[in-house]
Length: 391
Image 1 (cartoon, one colour):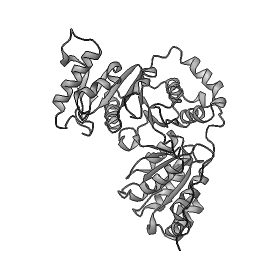
Image 2 (tube, rainbow, N blue to C red):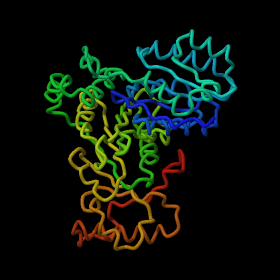
Image 3 (tube, helix red, strand yellow):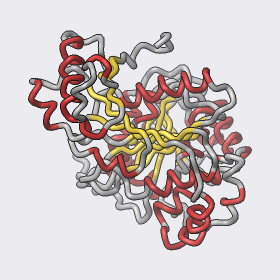
Image 4 (spheres, rainbow, N blue to C red):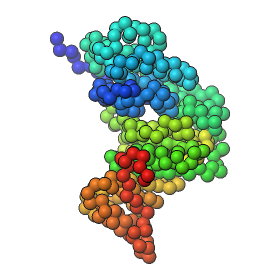
């Protein structure tokens, strides 16, 4: 008996789901399969990868204003893990976020009933997989998580200066999902930000150049060097035109951000051809009103037309790698005309010293800095993959 191909459920709302594998669990094959189907069902998935603690997952879900969390747990501690997650969400004022999980045969049927009674929305068993099929399970999950977020505001604006993450997150969601409802509050926010001097660092570059890893290293150093200061991050990744889903994957590389002084929000472009979401400006306004000391905006690397980041940032950093091909390729990169700083990441690659010389020369040409030594150009070799080194 061959199962007929199942049709993906079409969400009525913009659904955002946090996915991860649980703490001490390196097995992410299953969650990767699941999150890909969730994405292709039109959901914006904030993926954290494997070995993530309850606290990290809960903080992420709150900052990202997610509808739900979907976890796999194959390490045997699922009863404690899921119950603690349920309790922590409640304690942090986010009891509306639904919890879904699975763990193959590791989670016993009796434990599944107990978890359901405790308040976990649904734990899927191998039997569910057999009767529903993969798409059928995901349809069930997405349908249960399909509810509006940001369709009503009540006083969030009064809590953002105290950096209450639930309030900050909800305002950004309202701007994204229900702009007409958000407008009166945002008029107030714009008004209060007129004299704001909070700097915005815009980071752009090709996909896979290492922007997220570089941001993580910058955040780590910022937190160490300025023990009092706070930082807000906005990270934009592209939506898929075909399904409307998105993989918001920048948090996979971020290890320093689970800190009370850091707020991070991932946004999907929701328009496939742009590197930035049109809600970026509003998200930045919220973080400015929340009085973060530094705001970093990271855009989806979709190539050579990233110059729109200039409209949103005070200082721009272009991240690239030594593998740009022939030197003539550098003449096509718009951002080398505009960037204040250039990071040549993956500097441990062969040919990096030749590459940095070419990039410095091109930067000098683009900016007409003929009176300066090419070595003085603001082009820096970086190796973001070396964790916690002196830098």
